[in-house]
Image (cartoon, rainbow, N blue to C red; front, side, top):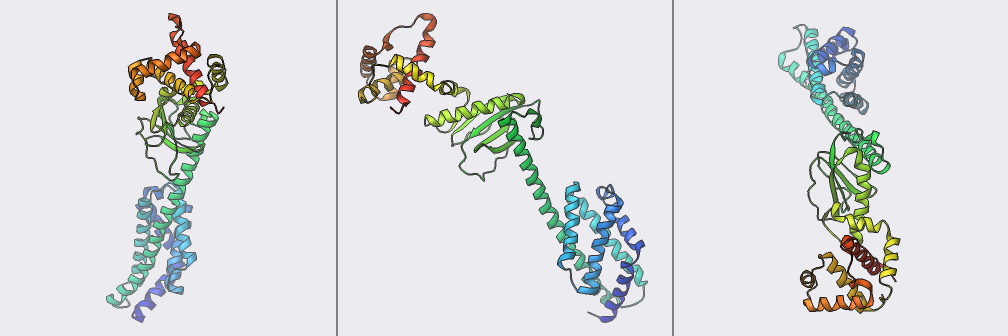
Length: 368
C-alpha cells in the first residue's frame, strides 16, 4: 500500500471523526434513504451511526481492523432495529446510504489533491472492507435477534394457548393467535417426536404432553393415535379440548390407533366417565359369570361383538371368523346364565343394548 495515500486518507478520517457536521450528514443520508429508519427518533439513529463511524475510523486509524467491541456496536444496532420492527432491507438501505455519505465526505476532504488515483483506490478498498465487515455483522446479528424474537413470540403464544385450553382463559384467545369469533378444527394426538414441526393455519403446541393443533381446515390424518373434532367455536375450545383428552384416553385404553373422530368415541368417553356405574351394571347383569372361566369370557366377548355389529349374527360370525351357529350357541348359553336373552320393551331397545354393552365392557376390563 502506498504510504502517501494512506497518510492522506488517515488525515481526512481523523478530521471527519471529530466533525459533528459529518455525523449529521451521515445520519441525514441514512434517514432519507430508509423511511423506516427515518421514522425513528433522530437521536436514536445518530447514536448508532456515531458508534459505527467510530468503529470504522478506529479500525482504519488505530487498530488495523475491527475488534470485538466494535463488532458489538453493529450487533446492538441490528438488535435494536429488529426489536423496533425495522425490516432488514430497510436497515441495510440506511447503512449503505450512510457508508456512501462517508466516502463522499472523504473524497471532499481530499479536495482533489494528494495521492494518485490507483494508490487512493487501494486505500479506499481497505476502508470499504471495514464497512463491509460491519454490514455482515449487522445482517448476522439482525437474523439472530429475529430468531430469538420469533422464538419468544412462539413461546408466548404457546403459553397463551395452554391457558385457553387447560384453564379456560378465553381472554387469551388473541394472544394465542386465534380469532375469538372463529371456528377451529381440533387435533389432539400422541407425540412420537417432540421436535416435530406442524405447519397449520392456526396454532399448535405441546399441551399437557400431547400434540394439540387448532386449524381452520380439517387436519391431515396421522398414523399415531389422534383424536379430531370440529369445527368448534373458539369459545368452546376448552370444553372440546377436555373431551378430546378423554377420548384420547378412551381410545388408548381400547388399543386403537390412527386418527379418530371425537364423535365416534362418544360412547367410550361417556362410559369411561362413570366407570363405577359400569361396574355396578356388570355386577347386576353378569353376576353368574365367572371371570376366571375362559368359556365365560368367550361368551362375554361374543355378546359384545354381537351388540357392536347391530345384533347381526352374520356380521358377528364374519368378524370373529366363526360359523353362525357357533355364535348362536354362545348367545343362547349366555342367555341361560344371565338375563341377556330377555327382550326389551320397544321404547327401551336402545337403552337395553347400551346397558348390556356397558356391562359387558366393564366386566371384561376389570382386573379381577
